[in-house]
Length: 84
Length: 228
Image (cartoon, rainbow over all chains, first blue to last red; front, side, top):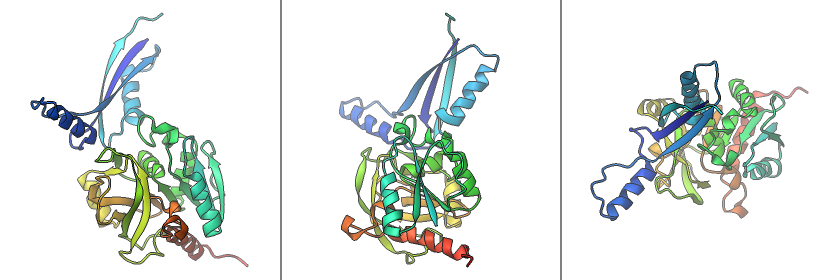
């Protein structure tokens, strides 16, 4: 079994309205060092052992459904979890 | 002429859409559940607003993979009018039937009120009943209507006159180039955030949306000769 962590964020070129609001709030709390905030999504997938290429599968899932390539970037980490 | 109103789990403007067609326009209309695979019997397809699949993941992201969407794609390829309003627009974007994507509104708030639009292109099958640059009042109701596309796509939209409606006077959601509605290159798929189906009777505050549906019917009558 695999445990896959997927991170989806708005692309650098796309203004993130939530991130901008949170940055403003941090500044008003006097954390003026904060230069940028990007809000994203974190997803955890548990995937059964498969004969298919796990890396390719996850990439396909990210591109087809989990992220929207027009405005979002994704990255993922695959951990091999202990089968039970 | 026969319209289909596609119903997804979480659609909530389907009844308004049905009412606009059946009662205001006086044309045939039928609800179609999202697992239907064939839309051949319809002349035009309407994707209503709402929160399909709870807007989980991204608005429209899950609805685009429902069975009926393959048939919607086929209808679009066949040149039939396909109209997506609000969540319907978001689904068309996710499905790749229209270019671009939606972001959260710039002010992060869900906005529900009438806005003014300018009809940028009145030479489409959806807008022929409007005057050139006519300013109309149509309500919006969305939290994610902040349209985005890259510069290259925007240039193409402008060159091909694919921007059909722009927000007039003020931009409520931060949408790129004040875009409120666009068509595909062929001109038979329209996506728009404002709700024309909620503006079909002066009693409701505006009847400006009715001309959009009339345009579709006019187009259909012009292109379909009724055999005696």
